Structures are given as structure tokens and as C-alpha cells.
Length: 506
Ligand SMILES: Cc1cc2nc3c(=O)[nH]c(=O)nc-3n(C[C@H](O)[C@H](O)[C@H](O)COP(=O)(O)O)c2cc1C
Image (cartoon, rainbow, N blue to C red; front, side, top):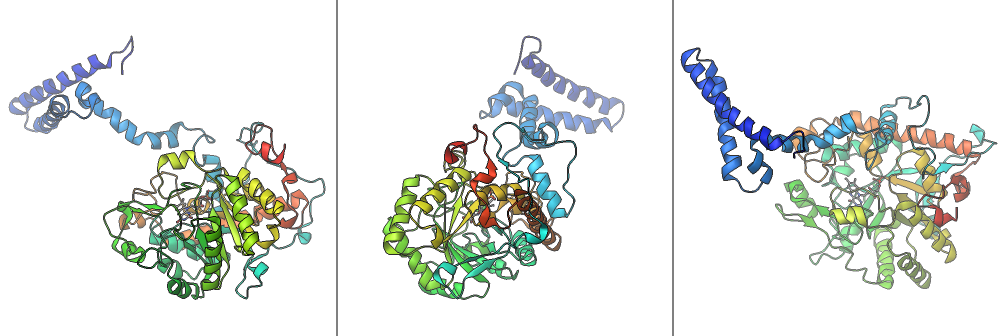
């Protein structure tokens, strides 16, 4: 903490002596000049006592032991460092996981504000970013086909579910999100005509109050549908899937933010209601198993998919993050062998978000979405499985250009979680696991939830969907295509330095 010109240790020693000196001076001033000086006497007395404690008593913090109250300033600055960097020092394209340019675009869409910008792109235009290849012959507005895909049509299901927009709200459990956030998302989803995934939080009590179409997610702990041994309870699943709002069931095999690890809900966020809905004790972290006990091999995984399809009677998908593509190949071969296919596969990129995950998993595991999509797409085509199911994709696909990237690389529809959190007003304070979310989204603290107005935020969710869909249609026209079925990797310009380049042979 010192250099040749400025020795902080000397400054700290002088400051500490000054504090004691000022205490003495104000004590005398209070006694002989005016009583009101004693307010300062008390203040400097407290500082002196703190100093003695920091310098002589506590042993945990070397900085406080050496520098006293001046050292405390360092901890205060460290505490507000993220906010200072976010508001004062970071450039518009610096922050992670989403920079200010990306976040602002979502905020503007959610508020229904025009997002046209002036002067030029703020991005590093000639680096590694993927660009979209436009056509010299754009599509006329009246020639653009409305988006429409039907999940479950491959099995001829009466309960097949049709999506009329390319985007859905990705899994976020009640637990990771608070009730007002769920209500706002659900109402917004209903208004925008898109489905909402329940996440792995058990019985979707709050989701059901919104009237939104739901994709019920079954996590590895099977909250809401498990028997006393933690295995699937067919009757519970049958009852849940019979609810008119539940349109599909998703078996979560893994998640991009923590593949190979089960869901984690920190104890700070377990309220009495959550403990009842999930059937878990209060006061301790809830850690789900890393995989479904029923899915110990490719064969048993496919058998489990079939069982969930038969019991639920609705389209059933599996969600996973790609690790070793060979494992995906073997699973697809097993599907061909048993002639059983899920109705969709949802590919989650390693860059995906989470309410809480251990840092090594967050930073170091899971294939990023776009290369993963390419690999899965290639395997599906190679093994003749592509026309047996739909493919969904998630991983920072929060604006229309990113939707094009995902759909061009083989997805049929887009999932996003954090796009919708931003639409709700998330400021990326990165406190989702602490129950201290300053904008009331990922918290169960009623004081913080107070800031989230359900009606207003539902409107924003609807605006976001409509705004990005409008942009997406514009991009489709500029690409010169009439339907998403025509999109292919050839519509992307992938610079050689991009992570995607080796996958598509650019
Ligand atoms: C707060 C939060 C909670 C999440 N909860 C779940 C969950 O319960 N189940 C799940 O499969 N994924 C969960 N996810 C992951 C998302 O569904 C999604 O797959 C991932 O964030 C990638 O999408 P995004 O980049 O658009 O956020 C959660 C993500 C966030 C940010």
C-alpha cells in the first residue's frame, strides 16, 4: 500500500495520532468553550476505540492491524467497487455477462422506446463477432410467413403445442425468483402469447396464478413430482400434467451454468412456502443430485423419456448442456435403437445463467452454445434424427440478431432467461443467490420486492417480446428469407478468430 513518494503507513500512523489528539482537543473545547464540542468528542472517542480494536485486538485482517481506521476505507471502497465500476469507470462494452450496450437494448425494448442509435456501432466491429449476411433482394413484408412450429407433431400428439413466436421464457424456479417476478413474467408471457418454463422449483403455484402456458420442468430432485425415495412419482406427474396450463414437460438433465452438478438453492432463500412446495427443510442449502437416478445410462435415459411421455400425455423435452459430443451421439443412437425420441431437445450453452452455482462450474464447464448447436445439429442430421424432434437453444440470445444466430445454426426456437430478467429491470448486480436483489427480482425479502410493480413489469415483458419479434421479422426480410426454415449457417459471416469458425469451416 505504499510507494516511493507516498508512504501510506506513515500517513496511517499520523492519522491515528491525530484522531487521539482531536479527541483530547474537543474534550477540552467542550469543557472550556462550549458544550456542543462534545458531539465531536464522542465521535473521535468512538474512532479512537475502533482504532485500538483494529490495531491491538482483532487478528483477522492484516490491513486493519497495520493501518487502523484508514485501512477500513479500503474495505469500504472494495465493497462499493462493482457499483463504482458499473456506473463510473466501465466502458459501454466492457461488463460481463452483458455489457451496457446489450442491456440498454433490452431496457429500451421493454419500455417500448425506439432503440435506433446514431453515429455507428459501439462494438469492436472487426474482431471476433459474428455478423449476419444480408441479401441484395430483401423479402417483401407481405411475403414473410408468420412464425409457427408445433412441438409433438412428430408423434402425432393430440396435445401437440404450437409456438407462434420464436422465443420462450427459459427455466427460472420459484426459489431463484421471488413471487412478484414470477407473476410479472407469467402475466407478460400470457399477454405476449408465449410459454413460460417453471424451472425446477416444484409445484408451480405462483405460475398457475398468471394464466400463462407453462412448460413444467422436472429437475434432478424432482421437486413437486417425487416419491419418498426421490424418484418419479407417476401419479403426481400425471396430476400436474393434467392441469390445462401445463402444455409441455421438460426433463432437465443439465444446465449450462453448472453441468454435471445439480441445482443449488442457498439457505438464505428458503422461505416456509418454498420449503413446503419443494418438500425440503429450512435453514440449509438445497443441493439437487447431479443427474436423475432413473438416467444411469443411455438406454435407461431413453426409457425414462418414454415413461414421462406416457405418464404426462403432453410433449416432453430434455434440456442439457453439451460436454462430450460423443455422449450425445451415443444417446441419439440409443433413441434410434429404441425408436423413442423426446419431442424437443433444449441445448443450453456453457455461458448460461443461474440463480447460484459454484464458480468453477460457472466459469469452466460446458460447451458454449453456438459450437454446441453446430455439433448437435450435425449429429442429428448424420443419424437421421433431425426430423423426429424440435431443437431449442439458450445462451445469451437476448436480441433479434442473436435469435438469428441460434436459428441459423439449427434451433427451431429460442429460450432466454436473463433477457427476461433484464426486461423486468434487472441491473446485473450479480446478487441472485444472496436474497438481496436490489430490484426485487431474485429475492424473497418483501421490502425489496416492494420495488417491483407486477402490472408495470408484465407490460415490459410483453413489450420486450413484441419489440424483439418486430426486429427479428425485419432481419428476416433483410436476409431475403420468408420463413425461419430457410435459415442456415450460410447466413452468418463468421470471422476466422471466432470460436465458431472451426465448427462451420469458415
Ligand atoms: C435466476 C436464474 C434461475 C435459473 N433457474 C433455472 C432452473 O430452475 N432450471 C434450469 O434448467 N435452468 C435455470 N436457469 C438457466 C436458464 O434457464 C437458461 O438456461 C440460461 O440462463 C441460459 O439462458 P440466458 O443466457 O438467456 O439466461 C436459471 C437462470 C437464471 C438466471
